[in-house]
Image (cartoon, rainbow, N blue to C red; front, top):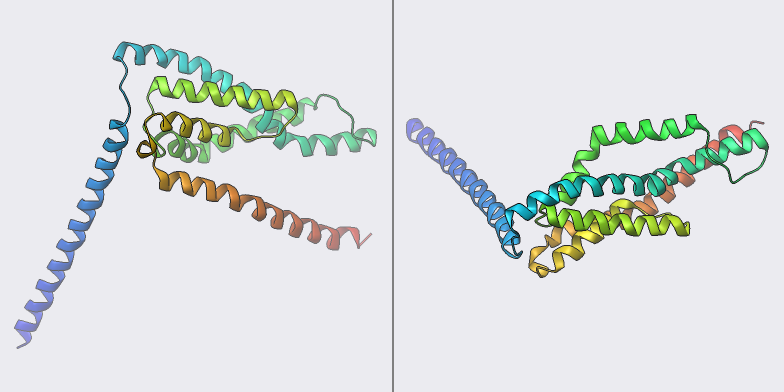
Length: 217
């Protein structure tokens, strides 16, 4: 009796393991087919043309870095620059930021890119849709132009938002099925969540600062 019970348990465990492996194989197959399905909705360009766009994409990526520095980095440096201006002159003045403030921004960009930048690059470059050098060139150019235009008008915008919009617009030329809708929906939800979350964190932080510092003096 005990031997049969042990045999039944062993057979049950083996069956569950097989079911688990089968589910993983199905999920992997669906992922592979899903990527192929997205890729099949695009017309493939000539290989020589794609190779040419590799060099062009490097050039336009430098333009994208310039546009990001003119807007995203400026957004991050702005509050610190204002604090420094008030401390030194007693008022907010429209002048160039000190070199050490710019250096802090550069270091922050490099460290952030090295630590967690690859996650955002993977999401935009691989998970939304199928991107080739030619399509990547169009995405980078269009998003950089929109960010530069916003910078000239004095509007604080996000390069990431612009690039996601450019990737989506490019992908729509292949139809809605060329887009990973779930990934795009998660990105939009993250945009909506970060605004109130940042608002609450800022309010709590300033309240704690006000209670611990302002009231003391």
